[in-house]
Amino acid sequence: MPRGDGTGPRGKGARTGRGMGGAGMRSKGGRGSGPGGNCVCPSCGETAPHEMGTPCNTMKCPNCGAVMTRE
Image (cartoon, rainbow, N blue to C red; front, side):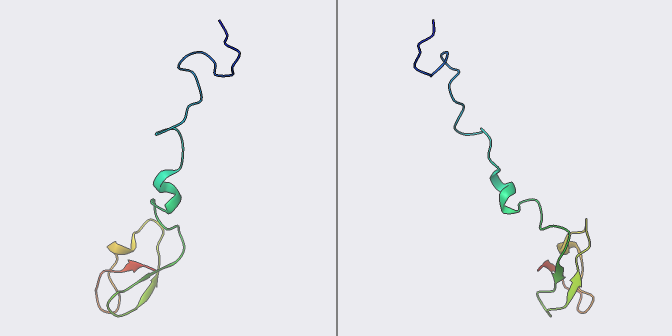
């Protein structure tokens, strides 16, 4: 029997709380920094263009051989 108070059947109210949508880590750039930009060497400051599909931390600095990081 309908109650008329707008709550609907028992257990079928508004779905809120944990796990109900929201972007989570994705909104903070958790999946990468995009295709553009540069990789920079933390040791000597050398920069190289970022190659799409290749993380900067897998590249070696062309100048000194250290592991590059994303700028």
